[in-house]
Every structure is written in C-alpha cells, then in structure tokens.
Amino acid sequence: MTEKKTKNGSPARYIIVTAIILAAFLGSYSLAVAKAGKTTVDVGTAGILAATPALNGTAGAGSGSACACCGSGSSTPIEGAATVEGDVQKISVDLSTGSYDPNVIKLKAGIPTEITFGQSSGCTAEVLSKDLGFYQDLTGGPVTVKLPALDAGTYSFSCGMEMVFGSIVVE
Image 1 (cartoon, rainbow, N blue to C red):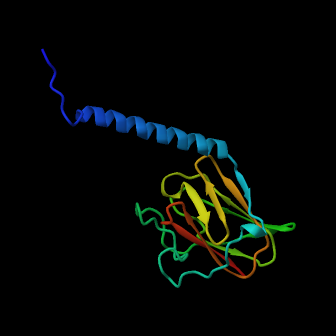
Image 2 (image 1 turned 120 degrees about the horizontal axis):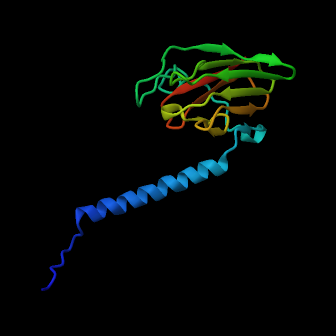
Image 3 (image 1 turned 180 degrees about the vertical axis):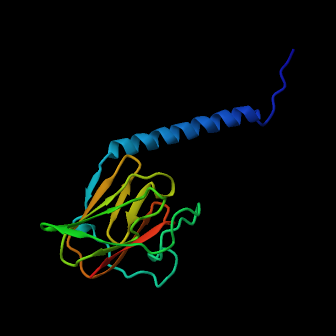
C-alpha cells in the first residue's frame, strides 16, 4: 500500500510547532528577566535623555493614568509630593489598583530622588521614562529608581506599553 503525500502538513502539526516556538520564546524571555533581576536602578546624569514638557494634554501627557488597553485605573490626576529625608527626597507609588497612585509626582529641583514603584502585573508590570532614561520590570516586587538632582520641568513616565501614564513635576 502506498501513502499519499500532501503539500501541506496536518493542522495538528502546525499547532504543535507553533506551541513549541511560543514555549521557547516565553522560556527565554523569563530567563532574561530573571537574569536582569535588579531591583534598584541608578539613573545618573548620563541617563537623562531630555527634559521635555508634557505633551499639551494629548494621551500620555501625564493627563491621568487610566489604562487604554484594559480600561482599569484612574484618569483623575492624583498628586503626591516627595518628602526630603537627609540629602534625598523619597516617594512611593502604589500600583495595586492598576494605575499609578500618585500619578503626578511633585519634586523639588536640585535634590536627588528615590521613587519606589510597587509590585505590579498586567498593564503596569513595567515602568519606563524616555525623558529620564529608565525602564524597570515590576513583576518581581517593588523597585526603587534613583534619580540625580533634576532641573525644573515636567518629565513623563508610563507603563511598558505606553498606555498608563504619569508625570514628575519638578519645581
């Protein structure tokens, strides 16, 4: 008896191959994240990319932090001011509601800063600031971002997908 060969493989074969590729990708990504495992990042003066003002009310301009992808979180500005402790100012940002609380961080110019972002997942599993040059994974626990003394201005930050936003206002 002869077997009949077809041009296309069976659908099950494609599903299995796709599943293997996906598993390999997720495994390598998890390994990379685990190796990075750093919970504190120090952004020196070389890490500051630009001190750009907010984008005049457009999405992502620190106009709140409701998640555009899943609708969670608050779009109402929630202000919080850092407290000066010795020669550094500190503030913590809660992410338990799926948004940044506070989403408008008030800082004093000329004083180094430590911002501790709480552990998160989903839309806010990562935090980044192109303005200040930092990117951190928040799935492994709270992360403290150390910033040098900043000049007056408004700096933005967001989730990794740039859909949940906040701003840092330095006066």
